[in-house]
Image 1 (spheres, rainbow, N blue to C red):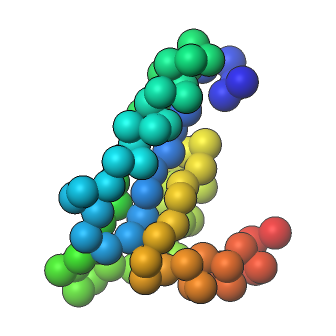
Image 2: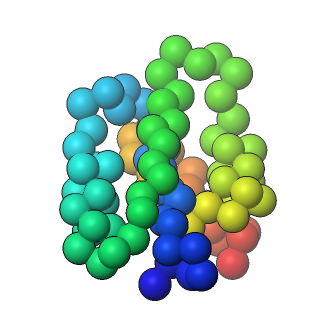
Length: 85
């Protein structure tokens, strides 16, 4: 379960995410388990000011259930997790 509120707050971080169907799959899973999905695409494409680590910290500080990370941040995510665990 996602906790007392039954809301799963998550997202996908990466570049050029406009065609991603990740949220669709999560929506099916949440619906099957009676959960509400609150999902955000966090697309860094064209954002010269984008800071990956700060974005992860904001998600954590705001109590997100989790985020998935894709190109080009996978290696950076693994390194960040090594520090965060």
